[in-house]
Length: 253
Picture (cartoon, rainbow, N blue to C red):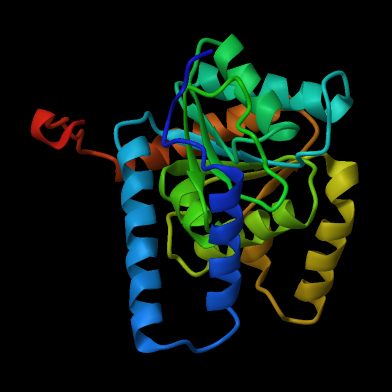
């Protein structure tokens, strides 16, 4: 399947980019180094905007890269992707294998669009073959901004530390009203039970408010998850996205 993308770097450049980011995050650097790094980040955002600016509205699906075809989590993600496509949304994922591939596959097999925001890692994460478009980011924070910027709901499938990061990023942005209260679905009640227990403990200790536990739905039912997205994401999308942007030939769009 052909996909529009921003190009994959060669291994030597990928390693150089990773070292540059690590160097920058180790503390203050010279003013000129800081300036050039900021310009590099700005250009990274511009490249990402150009990939996704004219894409359909998205639902983001987060989850582990470590599950394979034929496993329950993979099969559930395929069904989830197909259900999201059936609502008219594109499926936005991290662009890699596992849950990301499964949701993308479901979207394509369901007649929809699959978008990916891939990331450069020391061990290369290749974009999965089901993507219509993908962008390979050098920086995690740029990748995260792009995925949240273009999404109107979030489905959290079983995953690891990165998936937890994305879950709590979504909840934090909604809780602090940095974004609209888009729907958040945690799929797999048994898997996410320890997280729910931790949040209940936070409520007992008055670290969060009762309303914070209403920011997400925990379910094992694909139909319930899709119905929740339909009831909330579509309304939020209609309230937020009222302008359709036109392409300009002079900008190569």
